[in-house]
Image 1 (spheres, rainbow, N blue to C red):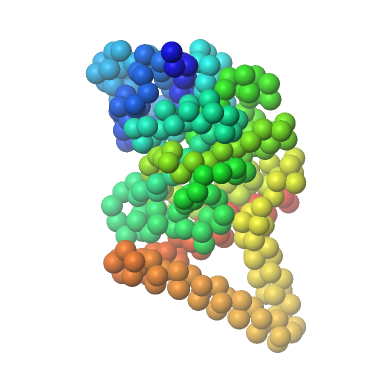
Image 2: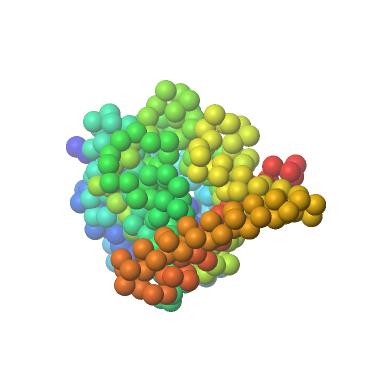
Length: 328
């Protein structure tokens, strides 16, 4: 018999997408009687729970429960859901995601084969709304210039990585290394995976394990997301400085260089020239990437949208990171 898999879903005001996720779970190739779904809801104020109730009526044979979480943050939601989970294996999913029909089956197979202690796959980024900027955000969210070497955004090769989103792992691992760190409001996956690696475990990414992920729909929402990512990444790296990656160091270093050159340009013309050159090179790189994507996807609006989205990601992530370093 296949092992029981507990799917844990942190959720707050997700009426637009929660039904898509639940429908995708119901259509998994994995036996439905060996699944349980636990939605950890932070007292949603929209119609999220109505959508969940409607789904439960349509699929009464799928074990689904809703648990309330007093703290509206993801690690708290995950720990709350896992505390009532009965499965031998735990799979974390997000209310903004749609897993491919064989997602669970592939995760379980990889765990049973011992390929990794935490197993995940690749996101297929899609815009959450129609519109040119929403499309541009989805495009850059899977581009190395926007996300660096984060393999789960674009990798085509299976192997050991530093982190995966929406991982699947055995309950025994969770009990052994501890739950998700509730002092972190973001980067809880990365911190959890860092502890797995410190304990001698492996993180396995297989690009055949796929899910759709809906990106933010506006530059404002994107900026808030990446400011939060940067802020909590810095807090996490204070505990695990050995886990820093070049993609995490470059944006704040770039901001520091701009700020330093701007200050020095008050007195030195060479600093003004260097500052101008650095900005021109940066803009040129953004425009080259935007041109390539616009031609490849036959979407002229990407010429403007891609530079705006990438710059928003870089500057907001770096700003949040630096602010976290200089505040208590």
